[in-house]
Amino acid sequence: MYSFLQRLGRSLMLPVAVLPAAALLMGIGYWIDPSWGANNPVAAFMIKSGASILDNLGMLFAIGVALGMAKSRDGAVALAAVVGFFVVTNVLSAPSVANLMHIKPEKVDIGFTKINNVFIGILIGQIAAMTFNKFHNTELPAVLAFFSGRRLVPILVSFFAMILSVVLLFVWPVLFGGLVAFGKWMVGLGAVGAGLFGFFNRLLIPTGLHHALNAVFWFDVAGINDIGKFQSKDAVKGVTGMYQAGFFPVMMFGIPGAALAMYHSAKTARKKAVAGIFLAGAVTAFLTGVTEPIEFLFLFIAPVLYVIHAILTGLSMFIAASFHWTAGFGFSAGFIDYVLSFKNPNANQPYMLLVLGAIYFILYYVIFRLVIKWLDIKTPGRESEEEIAQMAADQERTDAFENGDTVVQSSQHTNGKYDHLAQQVIAGVGGKENIETVTNCATRLRFELKDNSIVDEALIKRAGAAGVMKVGKKNAQVIIGTHVQQVADVVDEYLK
Image 1 (cartoon, rainbow, N blue to C red):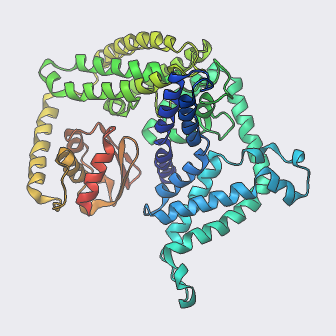
Image 2 (image 1 turned 135 degrees about the vertical axis):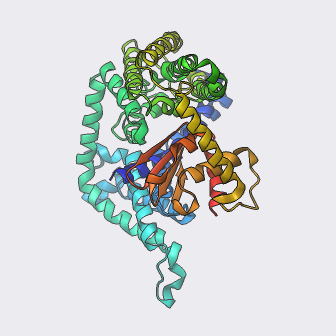
Image 3 (image 1 turned 120 degrees about the vertical axis):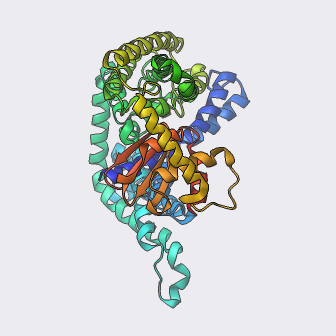
């Protein structure tokens, strides 16, 4: 189950990665004309273009989950997901349900007016992936040979989607009602609910399961749809965005404050060696809101610091929601998204998030410096002499690896910038022969290994990775950062 949820969380990153495009288009439109483009056709064009992405998130999630959960990122599984999604959403549309149940349109359960949603997309994506994994190599009799293999997958998915439609015809009203009740309960908690969401969002980061939690509050799974509504006229000013706004002070200011505290806590002789790691992570967090490169520097070394980080995140969410300071994002709570949302008509006193951010920078810096010194935490740059000696030994192993002892070189490889890192990561996870599959999300390489007990975490970290996490006996994640896609491409080349 854990491995399944891991893969699902990874799959959700594909459609989520499209959201910055929507935020960029709508953000530019709002800057041109804050009145929803009513006074400027160019602004209206930009806003409508961005909205077209947000209005079709259900289908995007269906495609993303299908590609992420399938054994191969084949176009057939994406086509199957689209086919299945069309079948379910059309069969269970309100007019269709009224006809099927022989009732008046106004008597149709309200849930069927919301059937085009992320939850349905995730269901269809999973069905498409399972169908592809099981039947994409199936051979039919000669007379039907044309429909064998990958061509069979969309046909079968359409059939399975019909069965799902029959089930949902009776189950969806109950399920939708439960989701709405859950959403209303959380909304009813007001600022406290936002704070709890922020706290658990951070705690789940190491597992990758935070994506599932995010889907409930950010998308139209339980009726909250905080991201979508913030970009529409359905928003309530000062309320919509409460599950986003509090992240800005943490990601833009808190994490850089923690990075500076760890840098200042490093030994004088080691500061130059670790400065680049902290600077790159801090800049990434501030600009894009991607915090994992810094978080994984202290997550496993000092869990107490990470718990403090989660508590401070929840507190920031609570404060922002209490004072009705709102801003939104399309990808994460970084400076780029903050600027784009500043002119959004639904943003409410967004400048106060900068004030809170300044306080949070100081708060994170002071708390991290005190706790690191008090508990003598060995954050990067504070290693003992023995650990430094071990790093040197690891480097010798790295040098041996670079001489070609572990991986067959790719004659077609051209991206020298990430060549060194990719090779060392492969060596660190046990070499090519130990790797079964490798994929990536926004910041991590995710390996399925034959045996993760031989993973050399020290070697991988020496290569420049922010951290390594083992899951079960066969999975390992290497935290790279926002350039993970480039590294993943190079790794794929070597593994070929």
